[in-house]
Length: 494
Figure 1 (tube, rainbow, N blue to C red):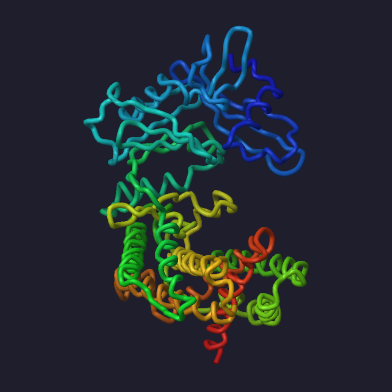
Figure 2 (cartoon, rainbow, N blue to C red):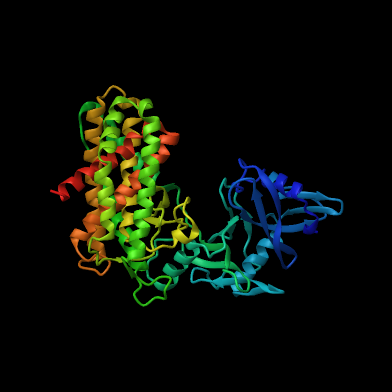
């Protein structure tokens, strides 16, 4: 039946789906590239060709029904055919039962030269047998589709597909199966599409469901709200509990990285040195970021507020210093090691749960290719991402709030810097203490300090591009991060 889906019908369906990323692009063609029968359904790969840019591939499970289910949402109906209806199979109880049963039994569904391989992880309890687990699709506005099985399991069906295994599945499975670290939703299983002579494609992953009401961006924001009430009264007061929470997150971050430090692992996870190839990778990325951000800043400079222009000028005048610092990565002796990391680590990726933290979403930097997301870095790259997130948390509150409207911007900047400095030292000290010293990943404190500056600068320059394009009032936040790093670089240079 799915062979009757014309390009027009497919395009109409895709454009009403929340998970389809190509709505704003001109579509030249879309068709089913491959399909594999799975019990009474088909799992299809849809290829979308655009007038400009690369093709994209999407997963579409299909089920034929004689009638439209009463509770089917709009995005669940793929096409009405003369014989009946094609619907997105995730909205059928049977398809979800089949998924769970195959995951539970670690079965394979094969046809011709391809197969769906189901892996079972430690997080899947043998007592939760097939046939006893109710399921439902979550109505989330996301780039993937989410399902709940029973009380314990969360299943993510990846919609946009890549010709490589998903880094999130690799990382979550590795941590769950090979370490005692339990502050992530445990790996319960995955589905991959295996074909001869081509890389496997990850179709979905099941994890333990986490009951958490807030992410740590929201929780930290509440602490800052309390802190902010004292700012107009010239009272600088931080509750002790916030320091405890920040230190705990530092420890949990270190434990996550220790779980990913695996000297005896295979090539995909074994630690690596700072090779010439990796150093060139870092320099190329930094050089590209610097060039694009300078061009964008020059175009938007006149639109910036005076206090922001002052920091922007400092950034522009320091271009040679920044470029010299970036090139130093090629020759500086570095004996520290690189490992797989989270890759997109910030307060929004940490859930507050039972007075502790659960770390989620290991897919990596959204704008990076899958290959680049699997590159091993110093774990300090994750650390720098979290520190920049703390800086954003306090800056966005103090600079964009009616309670602080009448306060001199320079004073607000000082208050922001003081709060951030306290959180930074609390988090980082707890992180290094938990990691242990010395450690092969961090050869010396001098290397740690240098690499932290490098990753902090890279992150802040990356952020600058987004703010210049979408939130001009927030440009001061990454610029302040850049200026702070520049001051430390100047101190290093004597």
